[in-house]
Amino acid sequence: MPKSNRPRIRPIDVRLQEPLKTKMAKIFPADMPSPNLYRGVARNESLFIDMIDMGFITPTGLMDRRTIPPRIRELLILRTCVQAGNDYEFNLHVQTISEKMGLGKLEIEDLKNPEIGRELWPAAEAALIAMADELVKNISLSEELFIRLSNHFSEAELIEMVQLVGLYTTVAMMVDLIRPELDPY
Image (cartoon, rainbow, N blue to C red):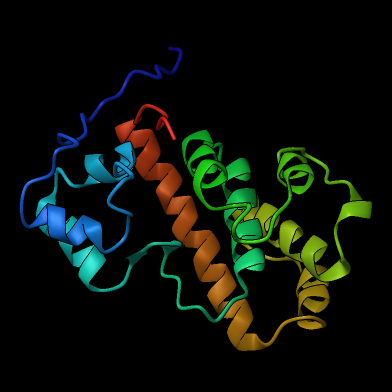
């Protein structure tokens, strides 16, 4: 049976009520309506509030501890979205923060390709793209790729980067469950 794109879980009203209104104001500017996905997840209000209070949801994405450079973080998020088939989250990031995080239009477009343009990416970033590819497809890293990554990043950075790819793979699952409409940013 073909997959429907029709939303499954309707987002709560954009005119948020307390306490969601106050919580959402922590992560989005007042002039920006909260994304459909977030308002869909907010159907489980206590879980959603806990996610904000614990710092799981931040203005720049999930679990942004500010220990990974913004450009690297955004590159991993976008490539994970591509590999997981998560057009919704990819578009949300591109419309709102990808360029602010340091990615150019050409780089963003290249991340959509099955094979990246090697001339666009320094060795460290090309290794990260390969990391997102392998983790989403195989749930593991090859020894060769681990060695490449280890030449550029610390163990602590690699652990956090794998966590980030895993979180955004989970977001792809949530998008599949909720099937939110694209946001009009």
